[in-house]
Length: 167
Image 1 (cartoon, helix red, strand yellow):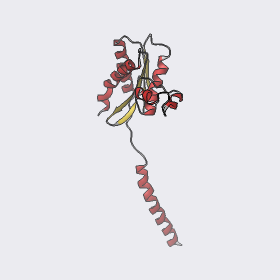
Image 2 (tube, helix red, strand yellow; image 1 turned 30 degrees about the vertical axis):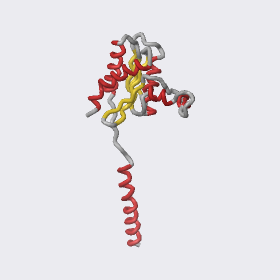
Image 3 (spheres, one colour; image 1 turned 30 degrees about the horizontal axis):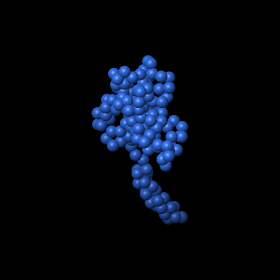
Image 4 (tube, helix red, strand yellow; image 1 turned 180 degrees about the vertical axis):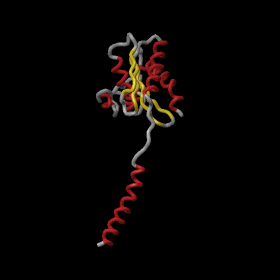
């Protein structure tokens, strides 16, 4: 009887050993942007748009699309905060800048149905935040006269934090 219990325990240990090794491979570490970094990006983007004479809203989301910062300038349209959040969410969700997504989902293309997904903003103004090969989130701008100008403001926000993220 004692030998049977010992055999069962030995088998359990041996069977558990590979799963312990697999458990180590079943997880990973990620780097996250702090709220202060998100706010720094949003503030820099807002300042860039202001210097261009544009009243906009800026949103920064984390890698999973959750809001970290939203700023709306005094005279930005009422629609701009939600649109900025949706642009940032779209870039983070699809892991691509929204200008590129807009081109990839043109009407008649195989991927055009993506535009019908709620919250998708397939228009310029949403940029991925990536550094040191890792995704951190995305920034979205709404309110400049064009998606290209929204992109320029978003780029200023990225430039303000890239050194902080590239440790």
